[in-house]
Image (spheres, rainbow, N blue to C red):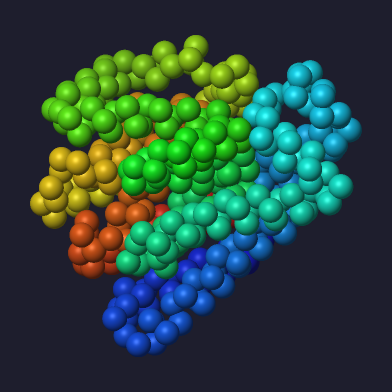
Amino acid sequence: MQIIFINVFILLLVTAIFELKCYNSSIYKTYKNNAFIIIIILLISIAGFREIGSDNDSKMYHAMFNETGNMSYNDLLFNNSGRVKEIGYLLLNKVFNSLGFRAFLFFCATVSLGIKGYLFYRFTRFPFISIFIYFVLFFYLREFTQIRDALATSFILLCLMMYIKKRYLYSGLFFLIAISFHSIAIMCIGVIALWEIYKIKSFFCYIFFAIVVALKIYMPGLDYLSNPMLPSQLTVYLTENSLRSLNTGYFLPLFSLFLLIIFYINKLPLKSNFLYFISLLTFVGYIYSLNHTVLIRVPNILFFGNIIAIGNTKYMKNNFRWIILLILSIYWMKNFIIYKG
């Protein structure tokens, strides 16, 4: 698996560099569509055909898959005492039980990566750079370890996108699908509420964000005040002995701040700028949820807004994209060496 990851990293880095240097060339325009589809299929195949147990949670999900297959639909809907409560994910397990766990994994990877790939291709000028960033920062975490989270994330992104486009019926539908896979989707309500406040009076949001950061500095355990508001299974997950001392790291908060500064330097119209708002919310979210194993998922999801913005010529110039490729390459190689060692 390590050899596969190295080769994919090199492939994605080469395509990102080629895109940055030649995105106006006829060769790039001719082969862009097919090359991007091939890369998405490659990533789906890696996630779908991985060895069970090569990540942290696949053995647990495999056991859950088998248990779900032995339950009736009535028990699944009304008498389920397991940790996972999200009915959409449980029903998906049940539907795929006759096909096997491998088919289930492949389907989940196809839906998750297919939606993310579509969003990168549809809303960025540099989709290969976007998929490279996703691979370096989130691919293993999302598509290997956090299956439910990966599915929910894709529909959360669709929910927010449809809301911004004022297609509220579709936004609500995607929200219901997302929350049926993972309760973290409840974040959509908070993000939309803050966005509406930001549009009306951004000053109030800035004050609120400043207070959150200040309180976090003086009260490092501030984020744990959110625990009673978490669904019961997330609270159990959070308080397990193996997770109490985990450190989420400082790279993503610092990288988010770096991107926020770049977006600001480009003198964008900040009011009613959704991606800038998401970038700001992502940074504050990382500060608030630092070292909180569950809440860190929220800014991790919001970071997709940063990936979209990086691939948008309005938000960033090419010299900054070269810097980002360099930073992320060093980051990936450093973490790969540590993991391998």
